[in-house]
Length: 221
Image (tube, rainbow, N blue to C red; front, side, top):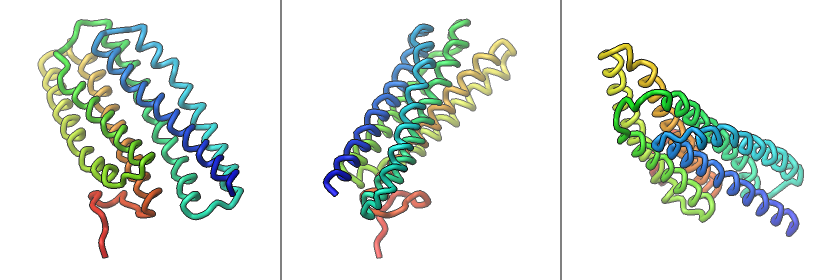
């Protein structure tokens, strides 16, 4: 049993290493966008394979651990760890998508000053950090607090889309840049969704409660 516990701890550490790469991908993708850095955007695209490889490795290790008949709490950790790795891989995909849009946007002058997009990125990254902290520390109150924050990111995304739709209506010249920025905004909204998923999964690991279809409040009898 001690060997199994060490293997589960190693599994958890690999998941955290993957999370660090995912968070870094978001930060670099947004930095490339704001600083119009083609080289950095290309690097974000190239590094996407790292998260793909992490996911495969974690899935394989999870299947091996499941064959050892772990206890109920460990079983939750392993199964939910697979789900978290999938969310992290999807976050990497969205960061790569932002990088691709950056390369398109950098071919033309900025359409507008970037205000809402950095705010969305900051909120989404904060949500991811809180979700991962709650996963590591067992702080389910912090995990539950992530869920409502997703609504703010959704609201900003809707606002950005409305504003960009106005630019498109003004002139056909604005279409390409507006559509690329819409993709960036939507990717950040999806990153926030994945962070929310991880927070919900952290609650399930530590409390055994599924809060996916609740408002995050603790259930009482």
